[in-house]
Length: 100
Image 1 (tube, one colour):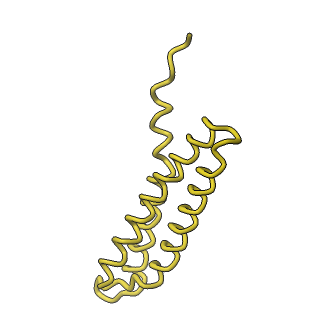
Image 2 (tube, one colour):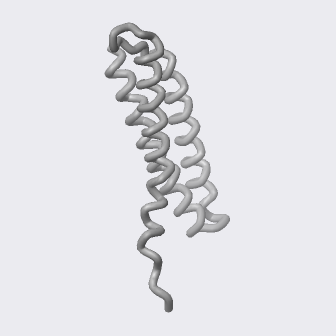
């Protein structure tokens, strides 16, 4: 039996990291584009992140409901989408708290 490639584990975290970096870059771009002395209007980003979170949650629930089709694959995909949902929800909550 071949040993599993340990570097493949790091690729599982890549989508969540890319989402987080993307949101940070959007906020940074908004801060410098407005020229408001560092004041950032975060309200345009709150609704899209909430919709992304809701969509990811529905996909994760749908994958959990399809467990009987291919149990191992669906469980693996369910875990990935659940983790992405948590990251997206944290980004959404952070934007809500920062916007006041």
